[in-house]
Image (cartoon, rainbow, N blue to C red; front, side, top):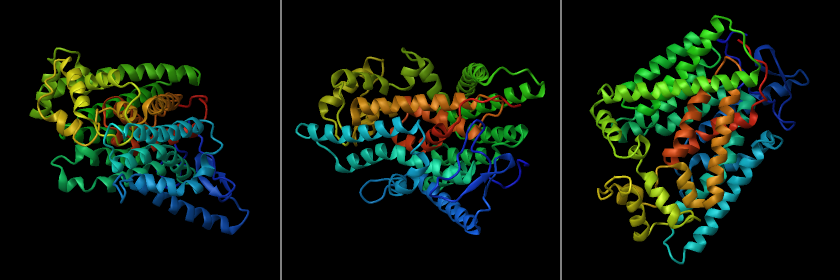
Length: 445
């Protein structure tokens, strides 16, 4: 099948997208990965089309993180409501079980901790509902993506990206740089989903154009991610062009992961150099120079919230609870931790952004630990493990999946040094793909 055809392809190289469950229409695999209804009954074709439409609608909703009444996001509500339907897609997938178990345990822990802390702390019921819902919805959004991918193939990523774009459109009115703060990554995921499986030159042109858009938008991280992906695609194109003899899939994945690490280090160096030169704008230049000249290493200078996180962990290692609001004592502990890194916390940022409406430590891992203690931290570490494993398995041949790698890199970044509320939109991409992936197979050029 031509890659330019409109038929649904397998979700990604190395991914085995099973057909719908016995509750759905009977389907069969066609050449090229296209799924077609079986000839058992004419009604099966109509049912499949209806389910495909429903899958698009569901994935659009999963991409929307705007809050409904009660502080629950549209995506979380849609995923939880649809779980009786989407459960059939994941119930027999062994990698789904740990995600479900830890997410539920984290949600329960967050509620229990906040009840215990309620005698000493003020608890925001709206923040509590939002956090608990976002935690327990992690497996539900994963199930929704898997259910949709079984019916749409790679177009599931396109539909989810479209939902994210719709969710980000209000930024056109509220942000001076909407491309950097939401619209850019949503559009990028959609474009990369569209070029997935097409000729590598098409992918490279798309990546170059998208990189240019982030270059002029003062978006260092997104630019760096696209440079890494472009470098990987270029490396794979070179290997395929020269018809290099490829090792077995596992060894190939390991080798390509090493290459990816090198490409990543080079990409980060290039982006920082470009930023320091002023090519990304004066604001980016000032931030980069200030971070590189700090008394601590670059990461700690760039993210002094890590100092606050460590200080709070040492102060209260079991966490706080979902929706718990900090006391002045906790704010001072955090300030002391930041000051230990040479950062001056008496600038209003700590009081307004970090602790003005709950705990915001600019780290998904730390934010979830604050809300759900060690089960929450374990969930975040599991997400990191699944993300890395998914990306490595995708390197088992010479056809990297660009949208999957972009989502994976965004997840890894925000688990470490990004707000928790950014993560849920990207988790279905990597967790959904991760639970569906087949074991590494023989590489193909």
